[in-house]
Every structure is written in C-alpha cells, then in structure tokens.
Figure 1 (cartoon, rainbow, N blue to C red):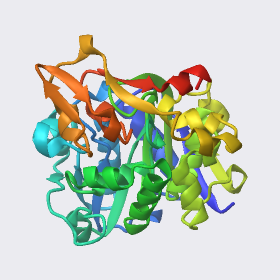
Figure 2: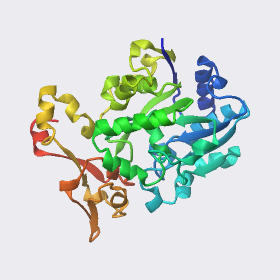
Figure 3: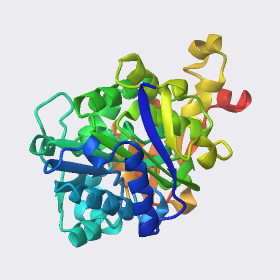
Figure 4: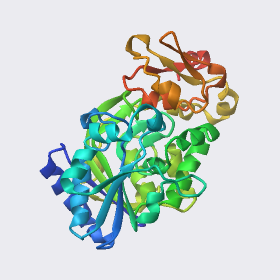
Length: 372
C-alpha cells in the first residue's frame, strides 16, 4: 500500500472520546512524532469559516483542536493556531469575533498557545500567510463538508485558508471554472503541504455546504493521515461517490501528490463499513454535469447553469454576500439583494458566507427540463 489513512469512529464531541479516538488514530500510524519532530514549531490550521457556534457544523470543533494541541505538547512542540476566515472576514467581521464564536479563542487561552491572524503575506504566487515561514510543520484540521464549487471540503480545500484575506476573492474571480479552481487548490497544497491532517468528521455536512445552507449529518468519524489526496479518496467513499468526482483529488493524483485509488490505500482502524451510511446529499451546483453523458457536456455547458438567488423571508440584508462577491455583481438596494446574472460566475461565495442560509440555488430552464 502506498498510502495510509486511519479511520476511527468517534460518535460525539465529548473531550475524552475525542482524545481516545485521536490517540488511537495516531498510534495506528506510528505516533505523532512520525509526522512532527519533537520540540519543533507547529502551525495548527483548523477550518474557521465564519462566526458560528461549533455545533452548527460549519467549523472545526474546538475540542478537536484541543486534543491535537495536547498531542503536540506531549512532544514539546511550540504551537500556534490560526486561520483566515472565509473570503470576507476583513470587511464584515472582526477575526477576533470569529475566533470567539467558534470556541477557538477559549481553547487557545486555556491551553496557553498563541492564536494568530493571517494578516501578513508571503511574496509568492498565492500570497499565503507569512506564518508559514515561522514554523517547521503545518498540521491541518479540516471539517468534513460538501462544497458547492469543489464538491468536497476537507483535506486539500482547507489549505485555501492559508491565503490571506480578500486575495481569496481574486482567486475565485480568476479561476472560477471548477477544474481551474481545483488546480489552484492543488497548487496551494503543493506549496504548503501539511505534515499531518486530521479531519473533524464527527458532525459533518451534506447538501449545499460548506456554510449555513448545508444540512448537518452525524458521520461520527476522525480521518487521519499525511496524504491529503488519499484522505479525500476515503472521504469520497464515505460520501458514496468516486474519488475522481472530486476534481482536486483527481488532479492531485495526476500530479503525483498522493494516492487516489482506494485499492492502494491502507485504511486502518475501524474501516469504511463502520462509518459509511447512506450516500451524502450532494450540492446541485457541483454535480449537474457529472450526471450528464460526456457527449452532451460541451453542448449543454452554457445552457445548464446554476445561480445563487435570495430567499427573501430569510435575508437579513446584512450585505455579507455583497462584500464576498468576487465579481461585484451583487447589490443591496432598498434592503433587497439584487444579482447581475449576466456577470455571475456561479462561485457561490455568497452562499458560503450567508449567516442565515438565505442564499439558495436557482436552476436554468434547461437544467429544470432535463431534471438536473
């Protein structure tokens, strides 16, 4: 087997259950010091998308972060924790408020570790946080969620949070095609490859993730390993889809950055059968073309479209979507949201950041007629 992924059942966020599950998971892989050198400097990078309660399923749970911090303390690591929340935090929410609401600030205070903001950039293609230059290892703590643009938000996608502030909007704007954006995610993964990835899949998300529009699902798992392509492949199997359906998995494997074939991945621990249930609900916008015969994809690409729209009764007129939009096609007029669909690139950043699940998916006429 060319890759190893530890898949452990963990039914709740009880701190002891998480610690036991993580210890078991790491032991199966050779221990924490198989990935991180004792006494080293480590950046722990959770998924802290927005200011939501941990049980909303949008962010990495703080007790998972705590358990990882304690494992690193066992080998005397110097730890910092940080993230760059969503594409819009610079404008609409103070990052401190995001850290507070998600419980990350409390855990870091109690564990006496530094909590940092990704406000300084490295001078490279993607303007990644300069904190990467201050550490020896990156430990990646993604959340197991569906995603309207990338289908799966987890191992590789979590590295997008290393991009500083609103430069994320530029990347969405310049690489709005799903395959092109997946390629960017793989480029970032290659640039800043985590030494260890631990996926919080205890409370997962399906449907129109990764924000408040998704549906919570009790997946009850922790997935651990060094190969994010392999982890993605295992999570895809849990979801009931092929690893190649997740473009970043396919591209990462093609570039030799990891293993995507399940038969070449050693799944340790409780195994797929212990955590696999009925197939996950998929985001409509990310799956339409996958259902269509390949011969029709090219012809239908311009006609089978998915757009964001506002459910007026739920809209708070907070303008989060206006600030998040990479192409600046959303306007707030007379307390109502308006879209210029002629310039919409269907990146669904607006849906991702909406605090009240008011952004829904609108289908083009052809998509409705052919049942996609």
